Length: 292
Image 1 (cartoon, rainbow, N blue to C red):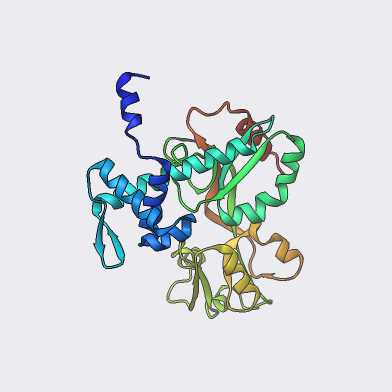
Image 2: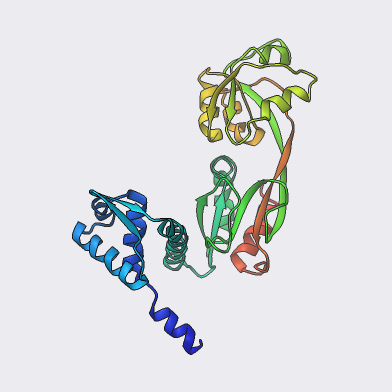
């Protein structure tokens, strides 16, 4: 470390200052931040004042009892939030480290609960020294910057600064609570449940079968799991990846209304470029391509 970098580090805000700052930005008041951090309101106010004094700028505009973050504070808060997440994940990694190492894995919620979780005991049994810590993410992010060793990604092999291992292509299935004779034309008359991240899914599905025109669009969901439950309770029909509903179909909670059809993307394991040789990642990568 150079002398210059040492002086710069001594000028860094303390973790207490940063935690108070992030909490005030997130909650909008020192009182709410104090509750969030289990501190007194006075202690939070002093931490904010000391941080402003150290940085030499005002971070908040006082509006009665509420603090309004300045534009500079909002930018700083995003950096601080990412840094605190990284430190938190690193601390969790240290606490849970065992002889085989730790794998921090970001997963899509549906993939994690419906595909990975039932198979994960097999990996842990084969690698008893490895600890797997999981978080959920819906969109690509900075893998190294957020402290994840790998992620499960849906779409194409386009994650920036990452290596990709294709797991399988997506196959889509229309499901409902009961049989529905009549083919695609009958489906068009049903409430078509929608996923907000795939707004064109139904239009593409009907167009691929030569059917255009308006359909009866139904409720919108942010994740597959509640949409599948809505379909199971008769609120409409859903277009979902086949692997998400295999157990529901086997238990007759849902009915497959079509044969599986190719989707528009695939599922990938991705990891930061240059991190190929980390032992927990290597073990997980070798296992997942053969998982039943």
